[in-house]
Image (cartoon, rainbow, N blue to C red; front, side, top):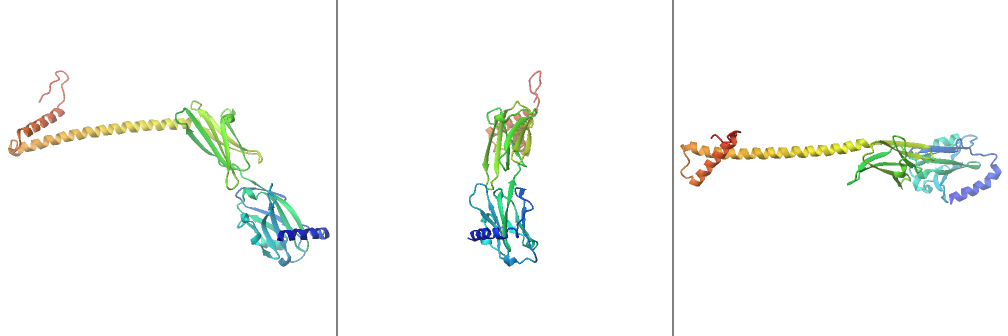
Length: 322
């Protein structure tokens, strides 16, 4: 309702006082980076000391393709009307009140979003009324390109992946170290994030025998900007084969350790049996009477086997000297 009354008042007063009261803008176009802050300004005449009770300032935004405008900030008769402020600007948009006394209506927007882009109306009503439009453009450069290298399982092919976020939508080009275009072999897709950014992903698949440098280039046509990332396929393959070689060496070393442990355990058990039987003999100079003939034969067998395991074979006669 206030916006309608303000515009009706504006239309009635413009014809009578347009020559006496004029709003001016020092800059009609602002181009800012996504996530940064921006201050847009319009100026109005102040003949003497400013009477805030008579001043009204309205900042509205209209996005391209949208029918309705959004209330960015309204200051009426010396008070801010935050209840009418669009929720998307709450906590981000403010009018610098200390600049009003010098005839400057400065709107500050922090953490600029893609949706902040559009046309802004600056309307001033102070002993006269006038308005001007200011355009805000928001850009988001594809500054950071995330790269990934993978191998397609069961195939001798590799995939290079480049991913980045920005605005407006960028085109992705691929080329090798000889600047030969490979874009026709790439698959590029995009999605929109909650902040209005384009999340662009491009995948290039190639054979493992193609050992070259590759580059993915994100071209932002509207901003005349390009960002590139470089990937070397040989590094991927050397890493892969190096990992396989390390795995094989680990398996071989593990098997050797297990075999050595089992051999040591077998020898230890044989020597332990030999010592037990020997100790029984030494106790009385002969085997204990309660040892049966079968146990006696077992001890003799263990002593014999233990002795045999410690005596080397003769290469010529193949006889063992006991």
